[in-house]
Image 1 (cartoon, rainbow, N blue to C red):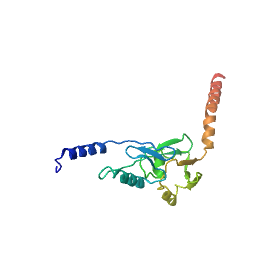
Image 2 (image 1 turned 180 degrees about the horizontal axis):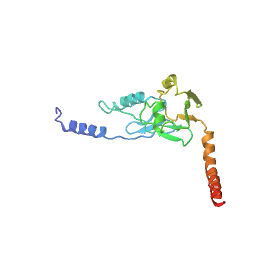
Image 3 (image 1 turned 30 degrees about the horizontal axis):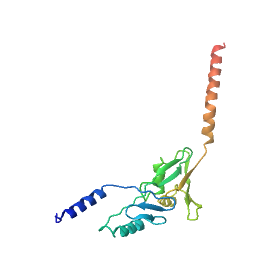
Image 4 (image 1 turned 90 degrees about the vertical axis):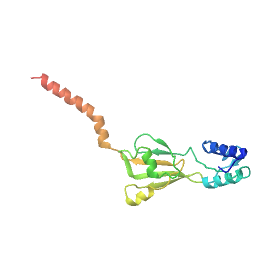
Length: 189
């Protein structure tokens, strides 16, 4: 390579080692993070791109052409997929759609209603805004591309199945009754 100075070779090796290592930093409740060299910086209410550029600018004072890549690692949504257990789904992709999140939770259950899905999202005022989504129509499928955000709640309404629930409860008793009647008819002449 063109660099023959030991200092340059060491810097390049160090830079190579740093690109191979991922370091996780905690964002505190007050929206700050303590980074080496930079100290405590505010990260609240900033996009990933804005924060990367800000950190890159701050690091440029001490490093030549620093590379900064930020990835949020603890984003999750809570999904109630119809009748059954709720699931916490980790969002690994920043552009995860509503349909992808539901698929990650195992899809819509048999009792679930695709025409009655509610997405609850916290607004800047702290209240939850509710979006009613109908995935059973073509127009509703446009809403399936909605990008989910961390701490969204997705609720899939369910349709009660009264007949199957009734049969589930009654079948053992009917079986017992028919067995008793059959036994009685065989024993008596």
